[in-house]
Length: 98
Image 1 (cartoon, rainbow, N blue to C red):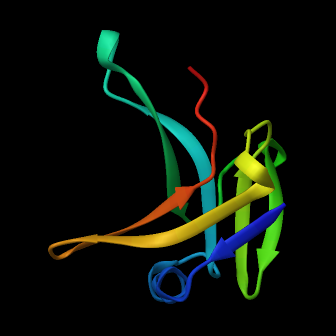
Image 2 (cartoon, rainbow, N blue to C red; image 1 turned 60 degrees about the horizontal axis):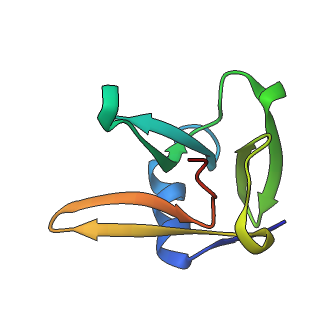
């Protein structure tokens, strides 16, 4: 598994993470009813149930990836998305199950 964290995302993680530079990658469901959608999500910190996650080290950042997550081309890219004054982490490469 190749996990790439770009420089801006890595800096953001180091500044914002209260849990020793760690992030959790998973697919969450947003919305509800007939309009629910699966969304690849990056959360700061480590998950509560570690047995459900694979653990990877990218430089000084620990990445927790939910087990059974399908990854395109065996590569994930974590980056910082900005819109106006809002900054958030995002991930590309996670396959959504329809």
